[in-house]
Amino acid sequence: MTEFSEIKQRYVTYISKVRGLSPKTVLAYEDDLNKFEVFLAQEHADFLDLSSSQVRSFLAQLQRQQLSASTVNRILSGVKGFYRYALRYGIARRDPFDRIKRLKDQRSLPSVLTEAEVSMLLDSCGSDLFGQRDAVIFQVLYSTGCRLSELLAMDAGDISLKTGEIRVTGKGDKDRMVYLTDEAVEVISCYLPVRAEYVKRHNDGEQALVINTRGRRISAQGVHYIFERSCSSLGFSKHITPHTLRHTFATHILDRDAGIRVVQELLGHEHISTTQIYSHVGIERLRSVYEKSHPHGRRKNR
Image (cartoon, rainbow, N blue to C red; front, side, top):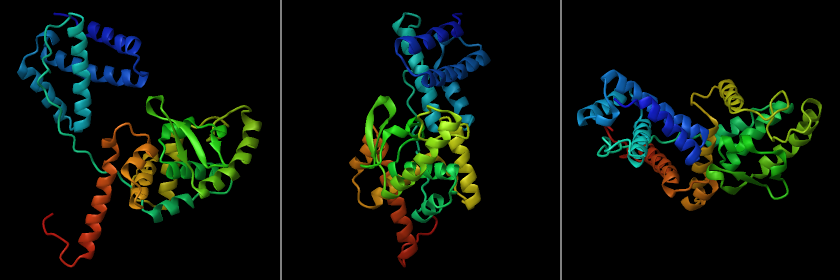
């Protein structure tokens, strides 16, 4: 029996060194293949000689774990990629997963805030340095629709307060311009001098726009904590994350008749299909208003 673990490690090295995939992506593929390896051990199966029933059994096992369709599809994609490698280099003679189709991905609609809830969040911050910093986080995410990773990478010098623009680097190292509201510009203008003085005392030379209490670039975990603390103090029942503000940004500008292509550019989506989910949000909102407002709008047993 050919040792799966040995070939797996060679494949992981291949996608890292030859294909140049990011460490995060490589780790995800390796984790998915580890799940497949556990299954092989449980079944006492040779990965080079899997039967159709064993393949279906693996798929059924994933579904019993109540994984989402997108997670199952990602695992299947990783396993299929492994077999493509094995075929290419003469390790395997066939791909037992070749006829397995992706599960239908029932994408859930993203949670969004109302304009009133956004105002509450933006107005909840204190006036000291870190209250101003929190306001900058909320303002930048809501007024630009940028990703958390893009916010974390921003340097203070990246912002043009005169034009209200920020150049960000998104997925695939693609640059795009995002735009600040007048209110966001005002908040950042007040924050920058106080931030500069704090950095000078605690960590001179730090370039990050958003800093932590040590005067260093804040982490993703730190931003999530700020959201949890703020939303808890406001009594929001919704689970709100930095990505919620990205969803909210897209939904609100679509509500004001921005075209879907404009939203695609502002969000930095490569494919229009990724952006179209926000038009579904609008449709659901229209349906809700209709059912509440029209005398015969509410249907029974929906």
